[in-house]
Length: 318
Image (cartoon, rainbow, N blue to C red):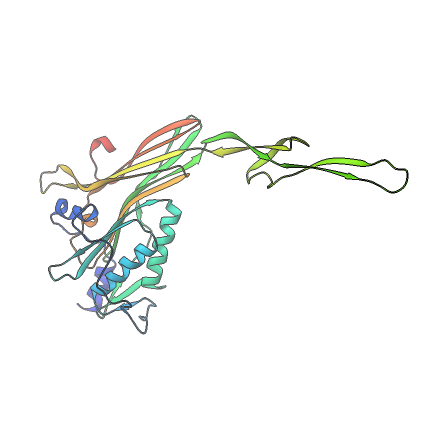
């Protein structure tokens, strides 16, 4: 492959056609766990001109990716191999905080591709990522005082691909909570010299101040020694389910092509996404014509049910 052709491929969104329902099993079954026979340290010296890592083979590169994905806790990781046992794909599903997921992804891509986001495999350079994911118009939804932003996204590069949805609470979801801090009472007497009477005092010692975001509402002194703190605390439950779709041959009918995955959290944001690494593979993420994200968020002041999508999806998701 010439340098000019490689650069064209590396920067062009990849599109392939194949048996997506069969390949979708990568995310659910039929693949080994994230262990490889790649050598312990497959990285070659020195780094590439762009600052990224260098590997002698795709097997070594993907073995490194599988290990780092597991170490960075990027969610369920699966490995696909060819008939000779060589690794051809590392795939997984990440569920959790969008910030934490983005941090782990940036860490792996930063180590793999360096500042130039480019990795060298068997003498050829591959661009890992060069721009933000393609996001369909993020939609705001509100119920009562509770509001969310819900969106779906896709990235499709020659080496790395991702497809998923996320939800963020933008306002509301708070309730008034009180916390009681129990102190310890002590009684102390001082016998001063001379004709002065003995002086006795009780006092309280507390193990901590009010938690962050709380203020002291009341305090009962010795001998009760009780401090009451009050604050506004976000109490929400977020859930997302995602399903990938593909047109069935030339029928124009959309069928599920990537198995449904879902996640739930009590944090103020949540992301669920499929991801995969592989060079020139038949990819269920690349082949996906659309993704439907089903979002639900509940709190003391509202309940938001919403849909988001990327690409072409059934009318029930629009």
